[in-house]
Image (cartoon, one colour):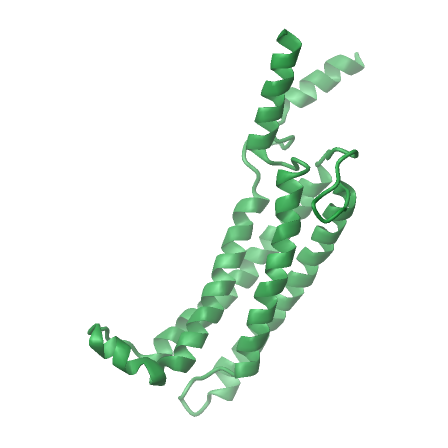
Amino acid sequence: MNSELIDQLSSQLGANGLPYSIPIHPNLVHLTLGLFIIGITFDIVGMLVPLQTWVFKFFAISVERTNFFDVGWYNMVGSTIITIFTVAAGFYEMLLATPPTDVKSAWGMQAMETMLWHGIGGVFLLGLIVGMTVWRGWQRFILSQDGDEKVQWSYLATGMAIMFIMYIHGTLGAQMAAEFGVHNTADILLRLGADLNTTLK
């Protein structure tokens, strides 16, 4: 009876051990990263526009400094919103993970330890992104009341530092997928195919 129940439950799961075929968290991660990086990058370009006007004139590109700052602000807001869902999906999918216990990552950590640090890092990054969005909103709506919007260089430097933290955090996530096969559809399918070939032989 127990084996029948297990077979029934496993047949309802996707190849990645989730109740859907494609993991959600890795896809949302790319939105978080893209929106945050674009937000900081456009604010940097907005700050450098006076130094680059000749480049825009040469290519006959009509730009206004405020357009860059608009892109920076809205991307930061978007990054905050999507990161809430990114972290939520990450924790949900991590709770359903059954990683191998006999494998160590390139950093010498086992799967559970890697998942723990990745989870803590995700919440920490969410807090940083929310803080950056509040800081960016303060600069947009309070600091720039004279109509000449600008951002602080300390804000941009902090954004660059957070990008480095994202790189470290993303490496942990990549190790979970590549080295432990946590909700990595392709990895699971390849393992199932190898096991099936071994069984048939």
